Structures are given as structure tokens and as C-alpha cells.
Image 1 (cartoon, rainbow, N blue to C red):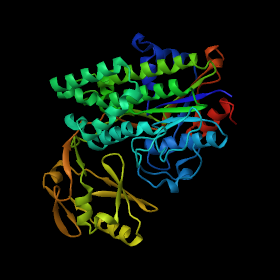
Image 2 (cartoon, one colour):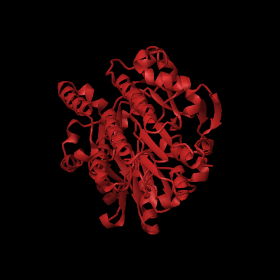
Image 3 (tube, helix red, strand yellow):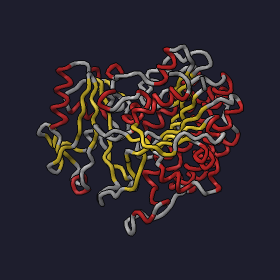
Image 4 (cartoon, rainbow, N blue to C red):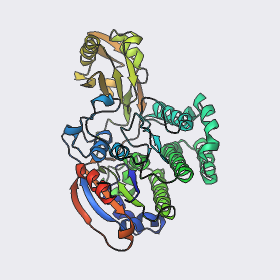
Length: 453
């Protein structure tokens, strides 16, 4: 059996890899994909094409209709299927999970193992437990920044707790230097703030390497990063301006180039782990990709819901009648145990109108509701209010804010990447060169390749 590392680079498409393959600045990406067996995966689109749906398809070997996972904050008791890390544990093998989407609650990982759920987890629980202040800090950062990165959000009470974990995390000196440089550049120019998500990925990568070095390489390990996907959404036009002709947003932050540089460094360091175990197999996966998109002209603003309690009060709910679960802005997830109260909440939210259009999209599974804010046109936003249960309500009274956001230039496509790099591939025995494969077949391929099936 071969130890397996799944390097989960969210939404990275083949077009990006092909664009970079001859660039000497990204030699690790070039080497990996020139030596790896490769596939083009296809995410089934029975439901919304979103990473919190496509990654479970990869991990569980199921289509979205089969695994039943629809949104962040959904009660895991309604998930179907067995994720790959659970398959390993049921065979008595150790696992090391770091950030994989929909991985909460954590599972006892076995000898040499560790388990750090994604930042949308419903608690900061981790194995080992000394990682929990670090996890809590990163969760707080995601909650407060959402679509809009806020300069001062890093200075919070969570920082004091994470400082206690730093000696165990053993961050590299160059990481500290980069963080200090980032904070300095942010003070000099606001445009550098958008790079902060890449630093979160760097922190998790340092933590991952510390765990692997201290405890050894588990039979299965996963590492998830969203930093390139986040940068592509905003800055695809910087790499591919001809996709937009005269419609490309002006200016450049260098944020996407920096994100790619860090990805290349991470992959190179992952490949160096063969020194710990020459039989290591690395699978580079993206679950889906991104491609160019043109947004409506009114975009550049988004309606957010940072104070859910105000909206719930207007819907007639008391604080003890619901619990807010973590989800990706502009969505919120609500746990409402009472069928009657949950139905009442949906009636109220579905009554919300602005400019003649519905304000919220609602999805119910079990005791949880996913509530997505549909940003209306600027003219509707400028009225300052909406209708709820026949009453006129201001944005502020409903706990909502209007935020300026960058107009995205890339969005999801179903085609993703899978590259397998191991002993055979390094010796030139490549099994595949971009053969098409349904995403739901990746799990069985990886387990077979690693000798588990």
C-alpha cells in the first residue's frame, strides 16, 4: 500500500496549468504535470455547481443527488455515503485531514494522524486539540471578512489565543517575514488587502507540514486550499485579458500571480515529502474549474447579512428558537429544530420583496435552512428598504449592509483536474493523459491506486 496525499487546489482549471507550464517561475507545477498521470474530471450538475457540493462528490464517490449535500451549515446527519478518510479509518489506517470541505465533525485520526476540519465547521474542534485556537482564529477571520476583506479584522481577541499555539505550529521564519510585509503593504495601500486569503493558506500549509514532520506521514492525508480560486474569481482578466476585449476591469493588484507563486511553492514542498517516504503518491485535484464570465453592470456591490439576529426578530423568532451555523457569505445557515417555527420563518423570508423580486433564496434540509441573499439592482438598493410580511423595513433594521465588492471575472465550470504523481509516474510510466472521467469515480481510482481497494 502506498501512502496518499490529496492536494486539493480548489477550482484550478487546465487552462491555468497550460498557461503556466513553460513559465520558469512555476517550475514545480511544470514538473508535476509533465510527470503525472492526468485526467479531466467532470462534476455532475444535477444541483448548483459549488465546491461544497463537488468536493463531497470526490470524497464520497457519489453524484450530488446521491450524497445529498447541498449547502454549508447543513446538518451532517443528512449526508449520505462514506468519505475517503472514513474508508481508511474503517480499515484501521491513519488519516491526516487539513481543511477538506464538509469534513466536520472531525474523526479520531489514529496513530500519526490529525484532523483539522474546514473553516466553515460548526466548532473549532481538532485533533490534536492544541490546534483549536488556531482553527478558531481562522474561522473568525472568515466570518468577519466574507466577500469584503476588512483591514482591522485581524486584531481581535482570537489573536491572543492563537499566539499561545504559535510555538507548537512552528511557522517558518519566511512566513513571519511575509506576514509582517503584508501588514506593512496593507497600510501603504488598500489594494494589497485582497492578498490576505493567500496568507491564510500559507498558515495552514505550515501547520500541515509541522504535523507531518512531528507525527510522520499518515496512510491518507488531505490538504485543501482555496486561495487560487479566490484570486481567479477576482483577477482572471489579469492573465487572460483577451477574454473580455474592452470589458475587462482596469488595474492590477498582482494578487493572482502571488497566489500562484504560493501554490507552486506548496506543491514543490509536497513533492519533497518523498524524502520521508519514497512510496508517497500525490494526487492534485480541483473538483471543478473556473472560466471567464461577464457580470451585469450593476455588480460591484453586494447586499450582506452580518446581523442575522435582527432579521430573525423581524420574522418573529426569539434568540433561543434558532442557531446560526457557519456558511459562505452572502449565505447564512440556520438550525431550527421546531417544524412549526421553521415553517413560520420560511413564510416570512419568502414574503421579502424589493423591486418586485424575491430577496431571499431558501433551501430546507432536515432542521437546517440555507438562506441566500439575492442582491437587487442598484436602483432597488438605493431605495433603502424592502417589504417583509407587508411591512416596509430598512436594510439596517434587518441587519443588512451594502458593500462595495470587486466585479468577478471568472466563475465555476464543471471540468476539473486530477493528476497522480508517484513512483511509476516519476519513472515515466504514465497511465493517462487527460482522459475524461466523472468526478464521482475519483475516490475509487485513488483508493485502488493507493492499494487500499
